[in-house]
Length: 257
Ligand SMILES: [Fe+2]
Image 1 (cartoon, rainbow, N blue to C red):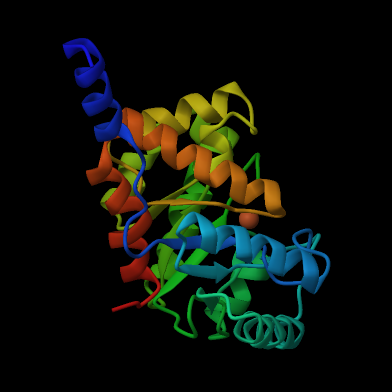
Image 2 (spheres, rainbow, N blue to C red; image 1 turned 30 degrees about the vertical axis):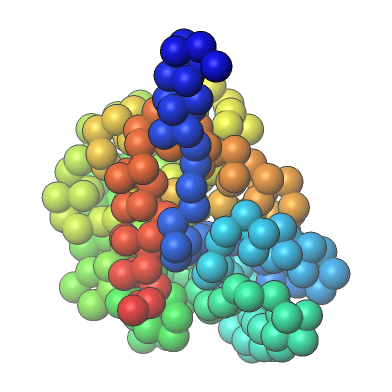
């Protein structure tokens, strides 16, 4: 073996993506038949099996609660139980945790302010929120503040895909100063959501303003892209960032000790 070959092997090894011992996917449409994610239990299990083989240890199931998908809480609860039982029966070593993805509209936010549980892991400590396109900065800051004084911290879902953030990336710094957590989608990293979302996602990573890299998977391809995205982020930003956004911060949000 030549010196060059040896050096290349050492260098390549140092860049290999090694999944953290605990890997928490904070955002996934894994529940069967409740929204635009997995439509059947078989499809859910196919996604979970692949996720487990990739090294993911925990998945927070976050169905939409929006105008388009007004998932009733009882429907979500029964799908969650069905899936947890099926994962156990199939002997897949992965933990499924309950959550929601809330559309940031007056109607949906009002239900949180009324004290209803739309948080993560049965707690109101954190709420995963997606912004509609066309919303303005003042509404975001005012609305987030009203939620936070009610005792829930905001996790902002995939800001890199939102037109407001695409036009004003510095808003993320302001939101993080107000303790908003930032969740970036894996499929933005691999380019599924277009060049602008990809560029913003990379810039947020470069600024160390990302708290969680999640799949937001709606199907098996979402998990395949999650793996690819982690390899890309590992190569560009290193394993310290990987550990932070796959394990440290999402574990803390999901209450995993
Ligand atoms: Fe989502």
